[in-house]
Image 1 (cartoon, rainbow, N blue to C red):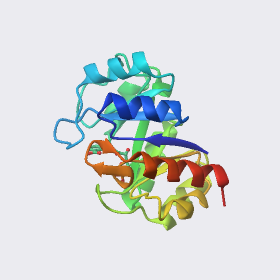
Image 2 (image 1 turned 90 degrees about the horizontal axis):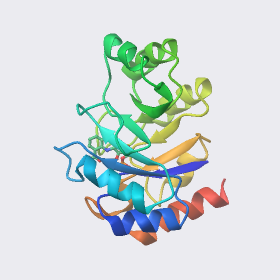
Image 3 (image 1 turned 180 degrees about the vertical axis):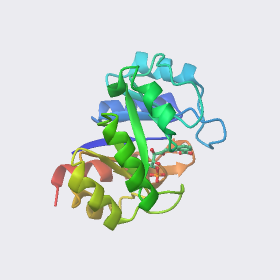
Length: 194
Ligand SMILES: O=C(O)c1ccccc1NCC(=O)[C@H](O)[C@H](O)COP(=O)(O)O
């Protein structure tokens, strides 16, 4: 199981995460976020780490720049999904809310051939429903799961056996600054397994 740490906003954190073997480094490029970093920061991080860098956007440009992948963190219309399929769809991670709406949205994504999905809580700060996450993982076993993961509850998420987990606020000292001890606890929990 892979681990993505999201909301990275300092170079020190990015280098630390890469050195300890975190699989993906997420940078939030959404201006309203307390973890906001400019797209230029993605390029700087990319030049200093040897792990994939994922830019997270809500309504920003969907053209790939220095980052390896873009995580589109909102529910897209059918037209938007279809316009992305003209690009290299494997470069995108599609947010899917862990809700009834999310399950319907997933059908649209699957019809468009989308493979990279992140099941996350419908609202930031909430914990993802295990029931919905499990239902989605039954169909998309490679999906990532996020939404309120902390060192204390990470084993509950590991037991769902997703393709990857994504953690941000649960490993922060404050928004945008990662607590390295908490990150190590997540990594050890995933390594030790159920
Ligand atoms: O982190 C933000 O502030 C943010 C703002 C707007 C869109 C996405 C954002 N974050 C995405 C993530 O941090 C993760 O992909 C995921 O939601 C996990 O977050 P958490 O529940 O804090 O572990």
